Image (cartoon, rainbow, N blue to C red; front, side, top):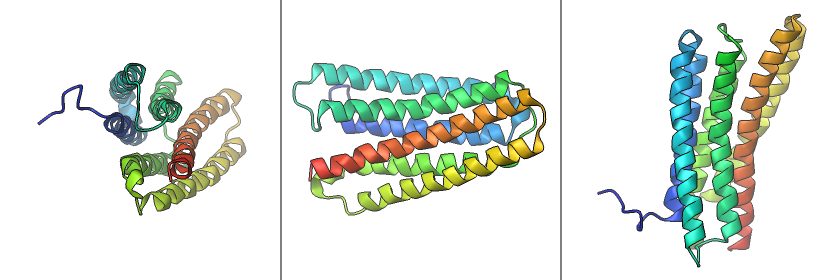
Length: 207
């Protein structure tokens, strides 16, 4: 039975935002594997991004209307905005691929996109465990470590991809297009790590 608006908690809304980010990453992986149908995937990403904005607005409105929250308002607001930024960034990179008419995928984007999906899934797990922290979640610290590990791997992938791009491509416009794609994927993954850092700080604050 669906929850009423009154029954929906801040934790529910944060989990919804994290799940939307996962859906965006899943759709981006599908786009990377199917650049011939980029418009279809761009439209789907835009719809997912709108869903994310809706949940973000609901959470911010709930914050404004709630005198006492389960966590500091600043922590809840920062987490919400970071989770929304992940989805926004993934939608933006998909849009760039379409606008730049990138119809042939560079091979190194495939594992990079897969890592983006992995880190959003683990980030969603961290958010889901957050409400248990008041009861000392035994798994949350390990999940945070996994997010940092995946982000470190993405740094390696990003550096290798950009190095190869400059080694293999001579057209400066093509270099600019692909570097922006890599930059935005890396930013989305970095934002997952920012979520992990906020949650890590909250573990200490509310211990």
